[in-house]
Image (cartoon, rainbow, N blue to C red; front, side, top):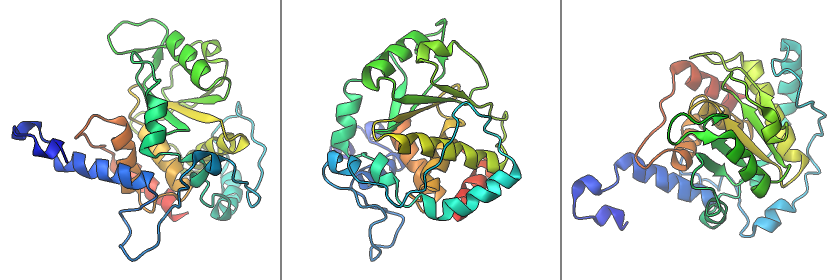
Length: 273
């Protein structure tokens, strides 16, 4: 509100920026602005994070997945998983979300200023590519990323590398899953679902585990993967809502997410599963 009352018009936030902030605030309160006012809340978020993390998952199907396995599953494996997924992700988002302003402020307040890392939720991070040798300002240093992750989430992080480029994974404790995303394309649907499946398995394994997703710039295709995972959990009813949340957490104020027709189509497929 204060920013909207700024005297100089050019310094006032854009309508898109205001909408993104409202969706971010509403998400932290468990509200879904895409629903009519008469509908119930999409997600119920307890006041205490400790209460969230202590909830049991007795109805959750246990899976045994190998993190180092190839992510491109066969059509038969994907078909089998679709049946599991219809009942297997019932509001896990309540247990990984923790996106109130209070929680995110405490997490981000300790973030190293020199690193390009954003918390989409307190357990889902996104960053730009970690370089072994820094050649330009604002690039992430692989060494600094490793130190930061070990200090804030010691041995409880798993990095998903979507860039198609390799680096010394020992700097990240070897906890890296390499996934070569097709250039300017999206992978087969079953592969995207399998990726969501591995992310889901890691977060379910321990309430303190976190995901770190990166591509080259920390936006594309990271946004597609994270939006797909949020839709996979049925925490949003539309791709637009998931994309708005990513934009509000990751991008500078006023910027929106540009996605291709094929990316939007695949996100809709995930929504309909």
